[in-house]
Image 1 (cartoon, rainbow, N blue to C red):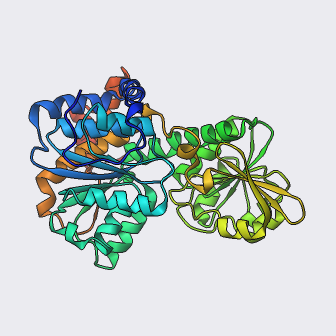
Image 2: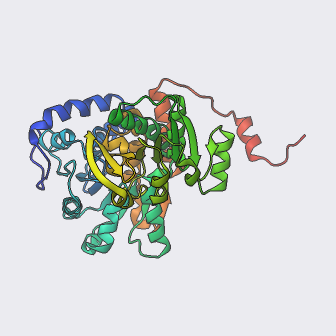
Image 3: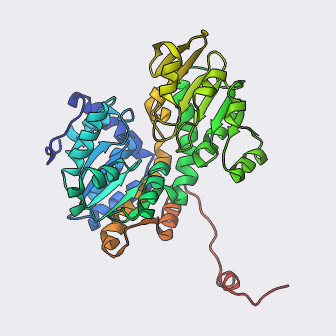
Length: 424
């Protein structure tokens, strides 16, 4: 049994700890890269003397990241980055079995959510870890006292990076942030394969519907939406993509998807899935055009992609029909079904990304925290990409863990690539 956390925690039920511990151990088996980093961290202690405040989805994978950072010598405090993404048994295990302070309860209301963020900031972290930029936002707006100790941070997801770059452009970002989301070993795998699989998993768990033969409408064609569209097609759906970016729209066409505006797709869709990072992707006019029984799901970070307020106004009745499924009956008798309150369906109705995918994302997190511990004081107050050597290291370690070998350049090949003089 671990010692008690230095700071008080707020979790649902400590009795869930044993179940959480077993699940954390299960996820660890699928995270060989993070395991190798943890073993090195245990010997070298590169984070000794640092405090890390993390606002992330409280899942089994996140638990393994927290334990890795602690092995590196850091003091870590964790809160949830979404009210519906916390796995209460894992939160309990981190507190009771591992002695880490955690402030997260699945289904917490808005005031509790922000109270938990403030509790993490109360630990006076030197580094922030965010998934959506809420912790950074609170530190910059309501808790500027926290900026006295914050030296650097990392951001996990697209939505958070968008907000942080806006802060940097306006000159208000108070410390450097590394955009984990932009690492190749994050967005090419986590966003595409992780989001794709886990989103469809959440929809199937919530609805128990067969995807084959349905018309699926995917809002956006960024890396997350590409994964969703691909997985939906793989399950037999006829997939329509909506986009505002002409290049991405063209890519979707060239990859065999139908592309049209959401207004044209609205009467066609059986399942609608948004993952754009923007608001009002599906709104009142679309609800009015949808067929009876249409399912609405979101995999973007915030619950603004589906206009829930408009749906509430249009509905004459609302009821819960299954776990994570709300039925809205409109005035004309049509029924629309909203999954997971419009929040991240892969975490609200399922378990989030598979551990083997998060292995790479969280390896980037751990290594970038090590990088910041060494270099943050020399960096400007802006958003930085993951250093390429870290990105390549994560890919190399993942290949080694999978037993896959690749070629290396010969001296002649390296010379050729560096030369401009050789031609036909």
